[in-house]
Image (cartoon, rainbow, N blue to C red; front, side):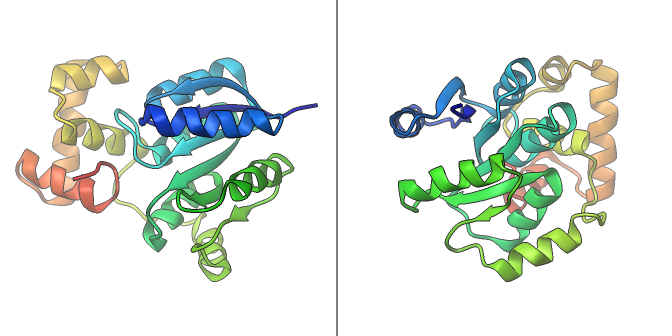
Length: 210
């Protein structure tokens, strides 16, 4: 039985190339998405074996999309595509439930191996992500490492992407007053006093690209 995959990347050419690769090897791509929110929604609807997510996507980055998938579709495993080989992001991703890491510079066989391995309940760390880092991340996954809740991280990303409070509220399905509360609470936690400070934090934490 072929594996079923949801594929998410905000670059259409890369996404289509990956889809062609997977389908050549008998993997069924049941849905594509260009942002993390759409990827999480497609996963909730279709319950694939694996979700392959780019780490940097609009509206909801790959790590926070993985966290939503882990909460709503625990049987779906997540492989993260990344151009960033940074221990901090790997640690955060493991905490969010990511089971596989593939650098975009790696050969296509690595992605296929990652999908197969995580679908069997394994853990895949491709080149550049050392086993020592993986073990450290697993040990840290049960600990609270961040100041912000998942909802607060979502608010930060949307604000950093230039969304207004009204738009944030609509995208998250909350009231404008609640969105304002989250934003104010985040700014207090991070000790920042303007949107520029939130943008700098979002870039530093890998929620958005510069």
